[in-house]
Length: 83
Image 1 (cartoon, helix red, strand yellow):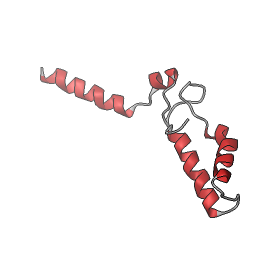
Image 2 (cartoon, rainbow, N blue to C red; image 1 turned 60 degrees about the vertical axis):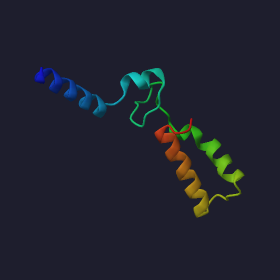
Image 3 (cartoon, helix red, strand yellow; image 1 turned 180 degrees about the vertical axis):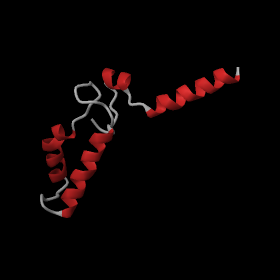
């Protein structure tokens, strides 16, 4: 019985450390999804949208505020917070 509990705990621990192949395949976004899977979010595809968004806040390209805005948005895309 103890061996079964140990194996179960080990399996749950290892599952948490693995990438998310099933999630990525069906479209859930994770930072470690591989390119070509439905859950992969290429941050570069948002470049034009992010530029427009930051400029709509009144920020000018080349300023540190604009750079901070772009970095924040890029980070959100990488983590899948916003799609």
